[in-house]
Image (cartoon, rainbow, N blue to C red; front, side, top):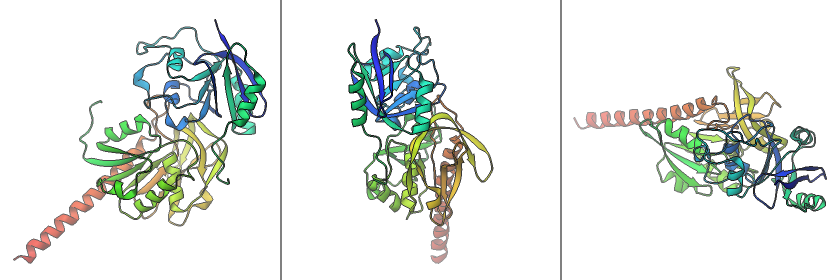
Length: 372
């Protein structure tokens, strides 16, 4: 027997449907994601913390859920909104249905609403807080009040076979996804994952070959601890690579500014152009803030732009082995185009090691020559 549920937006809009997850209420920033597959990876992506995710594909749940597709150890999304939940899930890898997965993860979710209408509202009015409320006696007016009490991210104005692990990367965990660690490991990197507030001195004491700034949720501007650490890294010769929130922190550390987007980018089909080559990447995106290209300082250049709205998607330092990219790679729900960026990071680290080796050999020759 289905349990009634409502989704209320802060502007007073009400959607009525059925509960398909845990009982209770939840609030958060309502966003939409246009990915065709990968609902389990999306729900467990730490970048979706405090967000109620609307999936624009109408049929969600037909492949069930499996532990192998988790991007982290728990569900981070505040809630889930879908159009239709198929009555049967079928996949040889699945060990439970989407409903069972949501209930076990204590995720409040709603199905049976017009997600196209909801998406149009978000596109036209921008991101807004919302509330999913479930139960036999749902009070729509109470759900609207709860939505209005909810907060958005504040406006800144206010074990596979691996290659030999010859490189050591210190990866900052701002909400890192497992697949990013897989990509680094596949490239022959040994990772030391450190907490977000780790000082630059502690990170450098680990003697890394490179610094990775991970993805994560929310506004980058209050992350002063990460900005300060990154500024210290920019004083070294270490390669630094930032993804998503890490890209934004890199921009702030360089002296640029970030801005809150109207409704952000959330999806697995976003076209991004590489400015130097003209090549177009199809990327996975989840962010509500962006680096303002017009504020990039001298010596830092734009490398990629969104073909949806022209927003900055990539930056690089002219004189340093440092670069960032806004999109982030998925395990299976999205494209794999940005793997080339991880290869570039590896190349920069290897080139640094080769330079160090060459310098050591030259010093050794000088010492031998001086001893004759």
